[in-house]
Length: 306
Image (tube, rainbow, N blue to C red):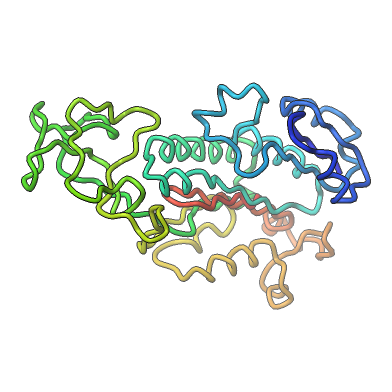
């Protein structure tokens, strides 16, 4: 096992508890870029990167982090380059969980920035994989209560106050300006009249969108809407329309040819005990990686099953 941990963290205790039998790198996270070039890496079974006590930093905060935490696209690239070495294929799950945390805090700036980072991660995954043998799925496990209010001018900043015809729009009920984005509930609700946003920089990194009320748990809640699912690669045609959640598992199961019940309907790679392809028409299924990117476009789970 190779464990990458920032020097400032109590890493020795973590490793001792894990009873690791392998290599240990306790230098800065920048070493993430060095390891793929070493032959030593591939003699280990597991690679773990522990870059913080709990959640890693938001992207807008990470770029100023002296410890050098890697970005999500960088970690996706690292993971795929390592996993592609396995002749049996691989299954990779990537979560952009900080999208979820940003929404829970009514902080649309950070939530949307993390969403763009997930988009970059999907791009990186598609660049490093072949659509003929890798199924990439992008979806979410839930939505949030963020919504768009009013009819702002085209080009009006998404984080800004609503303007119509170039003029600041005032809400009919309290005659105060309002932002395009807001939340049904969350920590930035007022126990009384709404805060007047006149002169407030609503595009600031730390600005929290206003919410209608504050729930019992103090944070914004998940929403109840259906979430999208997008895919590219083998069997992507099975992921269309409105689907039950458990159906997604069965598509992945079929693509990887895992369950015994699937064996008569799919080709398992020879490296995993499957039979050689009968003809060239089946060759595209003979080796199957599955990639799933669960982009929490307004939620929390991101998955790359590559």
